[in-house]
Length: 135
Image 1: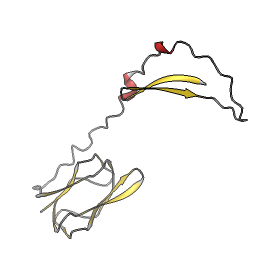
Image 2: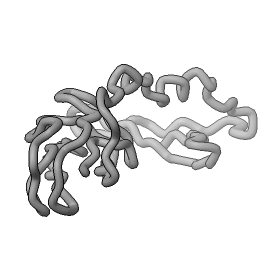
Image 3: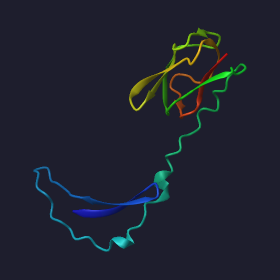
Image 4: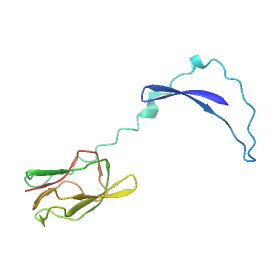
């Protein structure tokens, strides 16, 4: 067994890893040296986490509606079923949002008319981002 100290989001964990060969035999144990001198991973490893802000060019062309339909979770827009000016009924599917390999239907919270469509197919959204507005 090899022991490692791993730091994730500021929390430190001690893990033991056992190497197993293809034939199923276990590799000899290696004595653990002074684990207090283990250095933390470079901060550069966490740098790729923030996603680039590709949402900036997707501003609504017309006036915003009074009812905002937001993303319930982060994901990618697979399909938009409405366009600005379309009439919608409560419960009608407006947008398909893929999150964690599942397709989630974003439905109209009430009857109305689509005022703005703030996303397009392939766009990445975060939880709380406005997808469209209704009047």
